[in-house]
Each structure stands twice: as C-alpha cells, then as structure tokens.
Length: 397
Image 1 (cartoon, rainbow, N blue to C red):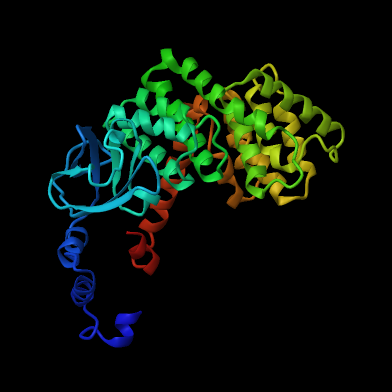
Image 2: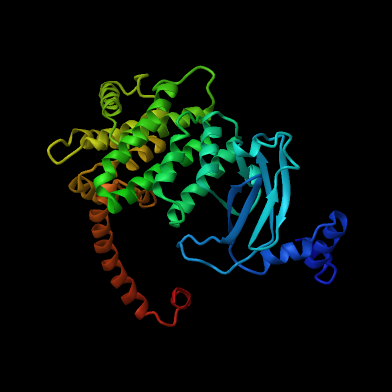
C-alpha cells in the first residue's frame, strides 16, 4: 500500500533497513537479508557448559531431514526471572554466551531455568538439553513462566518430536508439567497434541496405547475436578469453553466415570430438553461420550442423538450432533453415520462436520470416501471431456 502510494523508486526495502541500521547501530541489512532471501527458519539448540550457554543453529524441517539454511538470529532469553533478560545476535552456526556478567549470583546458572525466545517474538524453534528442559518443567509447574512462553515451550517440543529431533518420552514428561494448566490457549494446545499423540501411538506402538491414554486421563482429570460439570458464577467465557474441551478429552480417552456421568446427564436431557444438568457448554462433550459407548448391539445413544438432531430447530445444536456422530469406536456405526451425512436430512455444507471420525474409524472412513469420490471423479471427467472449449474447463485444467 505504501509503495503504491509513494512509488517504487521512493520506497526501497534496503533503504528502510539502512535507516534502521543507522538509528540502532545494529547490522539490520545483513540480518534481514538472511531472512528475506532464503526460505525456512532455524531451530536453536542450547546447553549449559560451566557458566556459559552454548548455542547451535540448523534449519528446522518438519520432515526431520537436515537443511542447509543459516540465519542471523536475534536471540532473547531470560534466566531464572523475567528481571534477568538479555539479547544477542547469533551470527554463525554456533555461538557462546558468558552468563557471568549478567548474573549477580555466579552459581545461579547451575540451577536456574533458562527460556529462549521470550514472549515467542522470534521466528525460530528452541531445543533444550535434558538439564535445561528439566528446569523449565519445574518452572512451568511452579508458574514462573508467562502463558505465552508456556505455550511456546510446548509447541516447540511437539514440533521437534514430530520431526524426530526429540523423543516421545521427553514430550510426555513435559506435558506432565501442565497438569494444573488453566490458561485457555495453552490447554487447548495441550489437548490437541494429546489427540495427535494418541493417533500416532495407535499405529507406532499399539502395545503402549492404553498406558498413553491413561497418562492423558490422569493429566486432564485434575482439570475436570477444578472446572467441574456445572457453570460457575463469575467464570470467564473461556473457562466455560475449556470445561467442554476437557470433558471431551476424558471421554475420548475412555475415562469410565466421565462416560457414566455423561450418560446420566444425557438420559435426563432426553426426558426434559430444558433440564439444567446438560448446559450447552458441555453438550458436545456429552454427545461424544455417548457415542463412545455405542456399538452394533447397543445403538441407543446413536438413535437418541439422531432424534435430537431431527427435533431441534437450532443450527448450533445440529452442529453439535453432526460433529459427534462419528465418535463411536465401532466401524459399522461410523459407516452408518457417514452415510447419514450424505442424506437429504443434512445440508450439503454441513456434511463436512462429521468427517472428523474417531481413531478406530479411520479405515472405514477412508474406504467410504474413496468409493464416493471415484464415482464423482469419473462423472466430472466425462462432463468436462465434452466441454473442452469452455472457460471453466480451462480453469479446471
């Protein structure tokens, strides 16, 4: 916008860097060129040696392979407190920062937590050695870190684990430090990561799946105790949303008491649609819990949810039901639910709501989708084959 207004000759990015460089006495032009003239971003590895922090950078690739990128990285870090913060430039593949001049207590670095990328303002991931990672876990448990930094540490750890640069065990250890987490953005990320780990573990280490699910149950059970099933006077809107997310997670991971309580409240709701025991904030969680108990021989929950869908005029309620119907662990029920999505009872734009199937239903869902799409693909190909000169055919090609 500004370039268009001032003109390309007047507006030159390099001139902007030069002006900032002159005002800050920092190598802004060289620094920014390392970011704007190559793709990707780095992961910064950090470890403690004596009273020094040792850094090394490499290109982060989600595939786990190694890239050749190198950046000039503005590092921000805190040590033991947000009152002890510092900045420095990592201008090569590796670098060392002597902490003695920053710390009044010279022995502090031997035990203090160190957090890089303060407030997550830097465009890089951070990989801590085992010692520093353990200190950060302790800092998270004792609420010494901001919500933004707690989110960043978890997000980096999961990404590194997915890229095979960190072990699953280290990720699970870190997740355990969030047992009393109540910040919405952090907890929402924690829950989503737990779902992804469960799905991967089901394929990679099926013999450990039940242990991993029980770990997640223990992780979220404490939060269920705090949030409860009922709305609390004066609670925030985000707390109300979190209640549903936590209960849904416990249902997905098969917590028996959560499933039983959800069933009790659902039955009360079927008898009286105005009952206070099934507040809208927890309905999705309850519907998922009900579907987790549905099987070919026990269709009560599925048939009841279909009745709720058919009887309500509320779009939001229909959305809750549709997004819960494929939560059953039974492939036959999932296939039936998928076929219902394509029936005349469901608006075409709403069908996608039910495509997030349970882990157990992935194979049947894939088979269903292939059969549906191959027929349509042939139909589409034949149609455009006879309309080769149309503008839409050229666009499609």
